Length: 211
Image 1 (cartoon, rainbow, N blue to C red):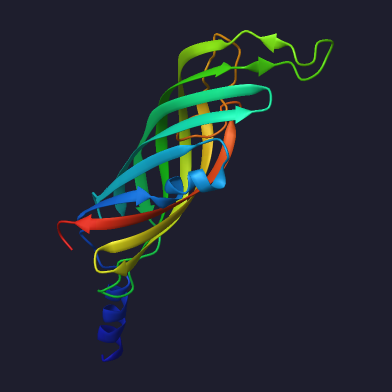
Image 2 (spheres, rainbow, N blue to C red):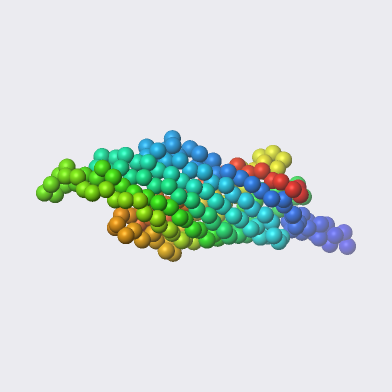
């Protein structure tokens, strides 16, 4: 008789429904892009998530990216914006009433709209090395993709979270250039010529509303 109530209490501790407020975050990995690349790359990404059921979180992410790359043989410029929408499934249940860490797997649909252009193009090999080619004018492109996400959001202090996520991306509709120039970097996705790509992201988030 005494064993059954203790067993029931232990089970409840592993299965406590939580109502989170709205979490707003910024991808801090985007803020260090100028330090990691030599192509004057700069970006900003914001993220929102909200618990919609016991184990499901709705997620929206949006950002922009710019590049101004001057290399030997070309000058490439790009700028554009993107968004992702999807959901996350809480994988690990809360063991204690005060636990608020978030371990999840999720899926996103992503869309990007951007422009790019190239100038100062030189032939680097062949019969006429060093010869100049005509500039490639600015054109508008877009891309669609799916993302599969695995990540964690750890509560550092009351309402303040640190997040990390691994993203596997599959391009659904690649950017189609009328000038036969591949997109060096699709905002929010990565190299436009790659049908699959992986990336890591790190974020700081703050929760508003119910706690």
